[in-house]
Image 1 (cartoon, rainbow, N blue to C red):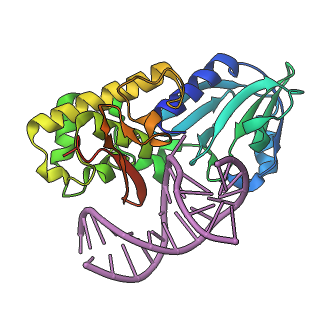
Image 2 (image 1 turned 180 degrees about the vertical axis):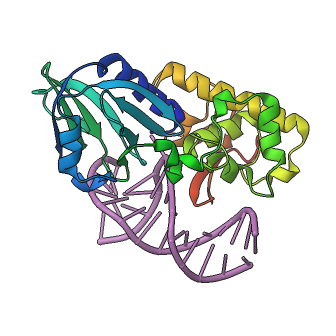
Length: 267
DNA sequence: GGTAATGTTAGACT
DNA sequence: TAGTCTAACATTAC
C-alpha cells in the first residue's frame, strides 16, 4: 500500500493523534528494523519526550521529536501501516504484524505495522543527508508542468514506467500508481521517454497530479470509493479494462515489477 | 508446496 | 556510462 498517497494518509493519522503526547515507553518486536541506533538508545532518547511535527518526503514519513536533534524516519516497504489505538486493544488483523510500538502516557499507543519486514525506521540527526533522501527526485505534487517536462527532457533514455517508479527521478510513485497514471494517460508502460511527444508529456503531468490528488482524497485505492474510471480495482479482480469490457488487461514484468496495462488503450 | 506481493538495491549483463 | 535484468531481502496469503 505505501506509495505517496498512502503515506500522506499515514501522515494525517499521525498528525491528528500522535503529536504533543508524552511518550512513556517504546517496544520493538523486531529491533533490527530500527537503523542507525541501537534499540536501547532509541528507547532512552524518546521516553519522556513527545512528537513535535511530522512531514512526508517521497514514501518516507519523518517525525520531529521535541528536545532532541535526531528525527525518526519511517519507511514502510511493500506492506505497512500506522495505527494509533488503546494500549490494551487486541492485535487483530494487520495489527498482528506490529513491529515497533510507541506507548503514550495517556494509555494509547502508536503501532508501526510491517508484515513483510521490508520497512525500516531510521533515527538520524540530519535526515536530508541520508542517501535515500539526498538522492531523491522532486515531489510530484510540487512540480509545475514546465518543471515536470524539463525533468523528462533532461533525462537520458529510459522507459516511462521505470522513470515514474525511480525515486531518484521523481519521489513517491510506485508500481500501483505508476500503472494507474499510465492507464489514464493511455501510454504503454514500455515506451521510452524519448519517444513521448509534447502533448503526451502534458497529459502525463495532468494525470499524475489528478491520480495522486484523488487517491489522497479518497484513501486506500482498493476501497469502494475508488473512481469508476480507474484501473486499480480491476488489477486484482476481473482484469477488465474499465473503458471497455472487451479489453482484457495484461500483466507483464517491466522494470522488475508486474506492470498491468490495457494493450488496446495504451499505445 | 508453489507463487506472487503496493520497495529497494547490489551486481551482472547489454 | 547508463539502462535493464535478476536475485535477494522476510513474510504472508491464496
